Structure formats: structure tokens, C-alpha cells
Image (cartoon, rainbow, N blue to C red; front, side, top):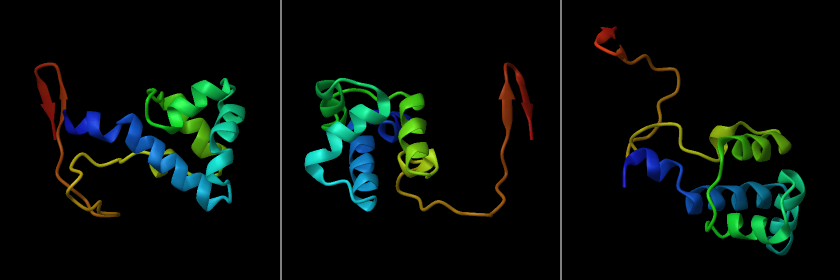
Length: 104
């Protein structure tokens, strides 16, 4: 599985959503109902998402994070190497590749 696939893994996001809800005092028994309400899903659809058995869209991730006043990065990893720790405010060399062109 590619690193990007791991970062958007349904089970991984579900665990993060569970953690987010727990921090906002939503008990485990109410999390699927709460998610169904936030995303306008049926209870069973929300329950599958909370178990990591249904894929998450970026729109859904944004909506859940926004509902709790947190950035979407709370629910997904925003750095490519899961073994590395993210560095905040540190400049890195990078290149933008567009077709055959590479811009520093």
C-alpha cells in the first residue's frame, strides 16, 4: 500500500474521528449517531465509517473537522513519511513538476 493510501486509510481516519469526538465529550455509544447527524447519513452508513469499513471523502473529513472547529489535518496525516515527525515552520527544498518542466 502506498504511503498516500495509508494516510487516507478508512480505519485510520475513523480512529482519528473517534478520538476527536471523545475530546469533545461524545461517548462511544453516541458517535455513530453524531456522525450520521453531521454528515446527513443513515445510522448504518455512519456506523460503517466509524468502524473503518467505508471510505471517507475529503468533503466528509472537512465537514467533521469543521463541525468541531478543528482543521482537517486533525483527521489525516499531512506529511508523506509516516515515520518522520512533521516539522513546523522549517523551510525545505522542493520542486514543482508540471509535465516535462521542473521548477525549484
